[in-house]
Length: 49
Image (cartoon, rainbow, N blue to C red; front, side, top):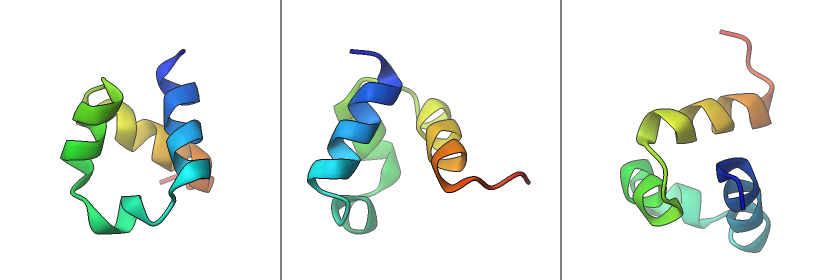
């Protein structure tokens, strides 16, 4: 799976986890850097800045 697929799968199964656990730990669990997770989250929310 790509990093985006892993992110969206975790988000669909347990979205509350993103509010309960440090994002650095989630990035590690998903096998990506915190920067990549940040980019994916930014893209998912549609923020431009």
